Image (cartoon, rainbow, N blue to C red; front, side, top):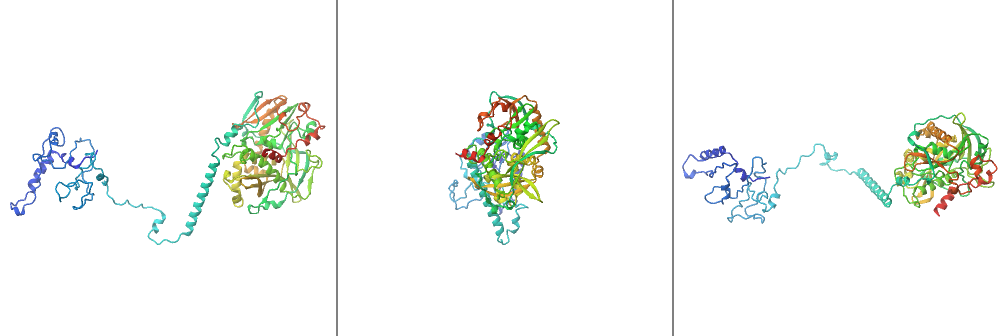
Length: 618
């Protein structure tokens, strides 16, 4: 609480008051001449207050008259010794001239005299003492001086040149202009991105959690669940495989595609007349024949094995059907399962649209990626009719059909003393290097919208190809790992990776090839931290687990919400109603099938992803 100076006048001690009386006599002049008489410092009578500080209450209560010695315009507010003292005098206030009479100040009692309130000690309008007074006077009070603050010792770098003539900073202005344009573009992308997500109530990860690749039926019996953490500790070394049979024919790779850049891009062609086959294990006539000849104990395809080998990297749900027939084990896929398609942005943190009919939804992008891979694998070939044929023709094609360039290598690995594994592996092309033929696998990464990945391939592929690949490894780690595992299973000498982008982000039918890069599978596996021993350790552990099961049908499902896989025991007729072709006869489900029925059924298992896309769009 602030008190006026006048209230502090009465706080002198008695000893100080006696000193003031002594000073009065010293100030009187020694000469009695009235002409040289000076002013006398008159001090009024100070009454004694035996109850405390300041004047007694009887004195403050009386009105100022001729009998009291209190000066005029001196308010007094009682205070104690513990109160903090405020301001006493304001010497910084600017006083108006005598001819000025501000409207907000009370005029003096005597006309023409100076206003009695225009003194440093006047606090008659202080709101603390007089709440009803005008508060405008106190607003002009300054407790500290008005000198400018000291300048900092270290300031911006241009403070040294502030008194010098400024030179034109054109380069800096251009840099600042570019920065402003970049900020505007970033703000525009963020605005469009937020607009696109405005109708999304859940993220893509939450949508994946709510949906499994297969509907778990109540009559299914769960036998075991394996967390991903146990897979990372497994390790198993297998000897070099042996080739049992090679089927199909391959066309040569066109080396001119290695020189493609974003500046001389090529349109992606469509190959509707070529047939592509996605045949499962038990529908393969060659695997049936090898099973009848007891060539192995476990049978699978490279796509199924690659899915098992890269289990710890998977995010989306998938399922594999396992059939235990006698002492043999068959790993199958359901017709139309997720294994026929290619995931896009599976391991990315950016959510995708949930609507299935959206061109950027997870399902639409998977169909688009499968369509792009099929056409890319045929366009980069030298289509002059020169082919490299193998022991047998394509086992799934009818006579006279135009078949895509693909070769099937049926290979056998030794997992244990009495356990062998046979897998059908695919290669898409061949190239002649130093007069020796080398097998190639052909795959394509697809860009659908740069705002989801944050990297524009048309701007970064030439100058920062490593950054583009690193972004794809982050967003599609599982897909790239499976491609690498398939190349290692087929013992391909080279894997070609294409970069395919949409002509326009909203056009998912027309695409262009921006670049094609080749990698050695083993070097690329080391680059993406894919351990071959760990891959085979996962396969060996799942095979050992399934070999302990009784005869019957089982399904291995990746949990949609947790990093683990589950094994369910299912009825013998499960999934048969979902097949496009007629279900297998019951006798073929009990024992390995014979070669008699291989012709007609093999022709009916052709699965063209492009036709599936057309049906989905319809």
